[in-house]
Image 1 (cartoon, rainbow, N blue to C red):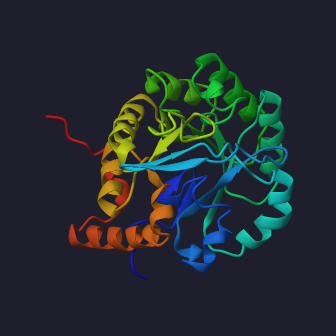
Image 2 (image 1 turned 60 degrees about the vertical axis):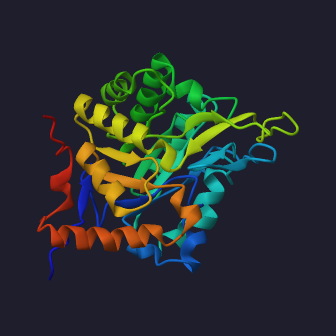
Length: 306
């Protein structure tokens, strides 16, 4: 059997390749099954789930930017129990790792959702403490170091079966501080970064384009920021890092690995071309073969300074 150069391991869980689709950009996974073979993906991080169904923010919620997208969806979702009943049985038919992203408006709600997810057949939990588009929770947890410590440690104490990934906010002055707090509070891995807080104004009406006024900026525009934050996080913590931010091709993935990533998530690019994750997987295989690199994991943190 040919060697799988793309296999990576996160918290003892093996992924056939390091390409994971990012939460909020790939629905509940199954929506994309008519475009691509989902079983070829290393993993899927499903749309962020809350305890109860959430309708999200009012329209308009998305606007394109010169190098990406500004969104304020507001974490619209069907609620954790409906996901388990309606979506998960279908998603389980595919041969890919399932990461469930979740959030809450209070610490108690975070814990309750985590406990429910800890009891079902998924691979990992990803706690979202960094969404800039909801009034309660979200960014308030991810940009206050005391709140970060409290929510991560509270969730970790109440789950027993699944590794916990913490998705970090870039909207802080020092991401190293928050990464270290998460590690010390029990996080098993980190995903970085979520969207950057941004704004766009209609010059004719002088009104913001988004009903929420501000939104989360994603896409190629944020890639240099994301690479820098992965690099800084890698120097700070010992737990694995899943890099996110503006990845559109295999070269971007290699860059994130050299900065310190163990795997990556593909986000906004899914909206441009649903086949991009598959193209990246194929291009990574070719790159590793041409460079005679036995395993992609050997690139993690391989940056050379001086």
